[in-house]
Length: 318
Image 1 (spheres, helix red, strand yellow):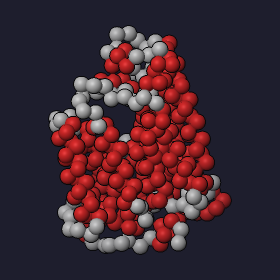
Image 2 (cartoon, helix red, strand yellow):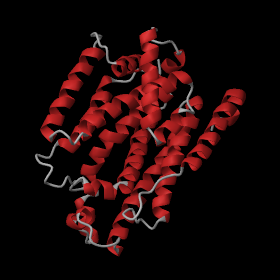
Image 3 (spheres, rainbow, N blue to C red):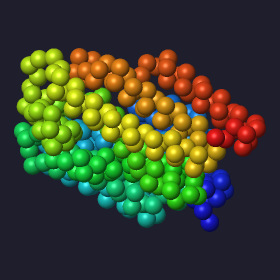
Image 4 (cartoon, one colour):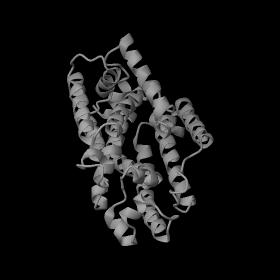
């Protein structure tokens, strides 16, 4: 049985008031926190939307535990480890009162999501805690090193999502991985200034050296953006653009009724990158964002696509 066939069965693994409430909580978390992601969730059929919201809520909890700077890095590592142990008990069928665990366990069974992927999601959040001290800037020596980080925090999300979206062509997996890289590089560009304030530099050191930019000048800014910094950020943006081509190749490989949701997500993220490019890569003066009205416009187009697919089938499925 293919993943797509399993997804089309549409039968819940368990039905209960508690499970309905668990999914409702996950939807509320996604609506409150997901920003760009949530606009794409709305374009999904209900069962798939519930599953995506459950996965998002799971990711959100892991991120919150990792980013809570009221605790030391070691304390956060311990808390994440304890939380992960509780999840392992729940996923194995053990009793849990955690509504997010309940929803994710159900979604994983319904859409055949390997638990190993969820463990990799958590592993990605712990990478930011690997440094022994917050006094030392977090950096990545090469793009290969950064790619591994992006894979864990973004590509794995894509590999989970396509199982919910439905696919049968194995080429979708590599394309989903690279789509995640495109999204995360876009996030990194948008957040350069904010991350630097937190002593984190996600731009590869080899790229900084090639453009004559230092970690110190990014963390302790004393001037407006320099020509060297623009060239550095342009190179990262060009790299992201190359990975967005994989997103376009991925679209026709997933189930038709899920395509509008992926199209909405790709469109919003790609527009964010275009706004960074339009600002001539000055991510220091103002944080780039896609205005809500534009997101709503993209969502409206996505909802039209979804409606057309349901009404007319294959004619509007590409």
